[in-house]
Amino acid sequence: MELMSRGWQRTLLAACLAMGVALLGGCKGGPEGDAQAKEPGADKAEEAVPVEVVKAARRSIAASYTGTAPLEARAESQVVAKTSGVALAVLVEEGQHVRAGQTLVRLDPDRARLQAAQSAAQLRKLEANYRRSQALVAQQLISANDMDQLKYDLENARAVNNLANLELSYSNVVAPISGVIASRSIKTGNFVQINTPILRIIDDSRLEATLNVPEREFATLKAGQPVLMQVDALPGKPFRGTVDRVSPVVDSGSGTFRVICAFEGAGTLQPGMFGRIRIDYDQRADALVIPRLALLDDQGDPAVYVVRNGKAARTPIKVGYTDGEWTEVRGGLQPGDAVVTAGKVALRDGSGVQVIGEPAKTAVAKAQAKGEKQ
Image (cartoon, rainbow, N blue to C red; front, side, top):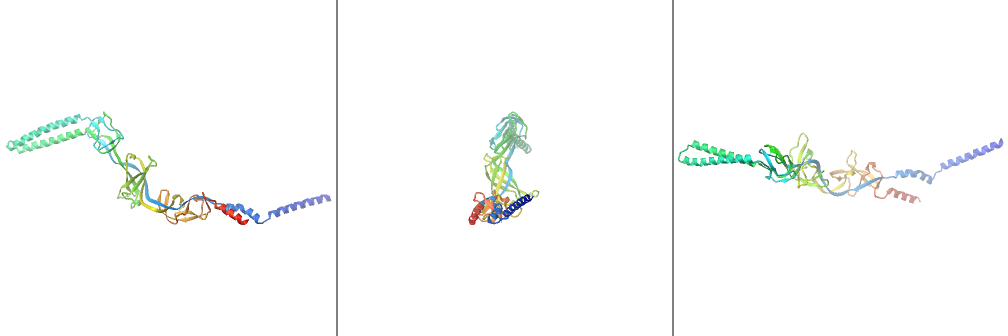
């Protein structure tokens, strides 16, 4: 019994010693223990946000107004038949260019030709009677009243003959303007009624686009300003034109005024194409600009993140013109300042940054710290 008590006491003593050693090890301090405890937290504190930057630089920039509008022909004509008759020949097809005065359709002229011949015969008869009557007037063999009647009949017959010749000329349907045949609604052999539209001609040599511009731009847009246009049907191909005219009146209902831009057709542009139009009304040759993507999306005043000494500094700026992907900076930045264009969502004022494509500054700082400890 005594032996068992002594063995139990030795076992209990060994257990207490082991526990004391473990507690002593856990309470051990010193530089190495501190370094091991702080190192994971230090790595997390030194982690930088990867960003992309672009340096502010000088370049030319233009102030412009942009809008969209369909292209329209400056002149258009519905060709109608001015007399009735059978179409003996249709001389044009859709898409064919014609000149003003060119014959497009020939109608049956027989009835009109007979009427013209009949009126011409009657005119010659009355002209002969009038000449004989003039000789009789000198001999006082005819009264002045009869002479006036003969003169009236002659003038009436001459008018009837001119009208018959005009009707005869209508058997040839001619183009009222120069342009291209846009549509044709007649075939050879069709009977054509008077005043019936049979062809449509559009003048595609000069096209127009009408913009409804807000009244705040009334003082900036003037006739003669350069215009740049792109159309969906011809992607990647710009077309240049000018502001042809500006309406002097602002519509009170919509608060807009009309600006008409003119473009040379030259067979490439066609009426009905949808145009995306830009009117440049001012130009600055040496402006300080940054990418428009660098502007912060918050609701405050315009600002950007500028990278200085490895940190992001929120910097308010004063902006000017915006030209495509570029924004003019009128104050707050200097040429060469690196503004953040990608990664700015994760930034705060004073955040550490790692510029993509440049050496990691945090790694360099770590190496220097280890060298100083050794």
